[in-house]
Image 1: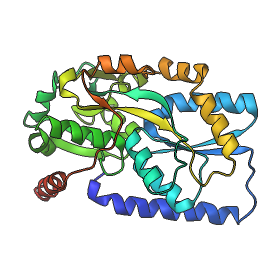
Image 2: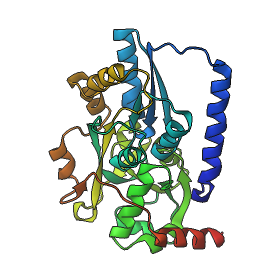
Image 3: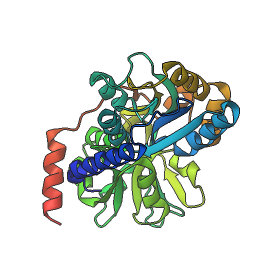
Length: 294
């Protein structure tokens, strides 16, 4: 997705939400259900956890996947949601600042380490971050205006003073983590700036190239929290306890996620954890310049 088209995407999301509300006709919603706004970085693990929770409790779990920023906008527009599960603390911080999330309700689920993801067998022979500057290389990234993965990608490039040399090779911006990962799995690009865990989602179709630890400025963690619009705060907390429990975290580990802070840092040297990164004006200038050339 072209990052400058984000406004139109959010407008379409609002129209979809209004349509769903109209279909319900204002009738009472069964509180024996949970609506989880879930960043696509969680998709493989959360689908299994939601199924287990439903089987054990009889409470229906509705999973709404997408980019973390887009989902936060949907919570804001719809005034709905029992759980918010983005792919980074950046959007947790934004949500709290906007008054959309209950402060202090967040817990850490797992850690995400940046990596270069390539199609299986790595046909373009990408071996390091420097290869992303190669003329003619087709690179994919998450849309940094709505996808946490995109934010980390831009931050990584800026930290290594590569933003200007790499952005011209960006062929497309994915609208979520799963859509960005699919760019590599479907061989639509030579590489993506992604999360290490993507390889484990589909190891037959994707490989990963580690980024040298000293070149990673920050790693992410997945927070889970309660929106202020929850219909049942106790039920929201019950679901959070279930996700961060031993069995819940084991599901994440089985899907290739890292649940221990020390292990995550072993791939990233002296990287910081958490916090918020904001896109610079330099990034927007380069985006406008590069897309005007196309």
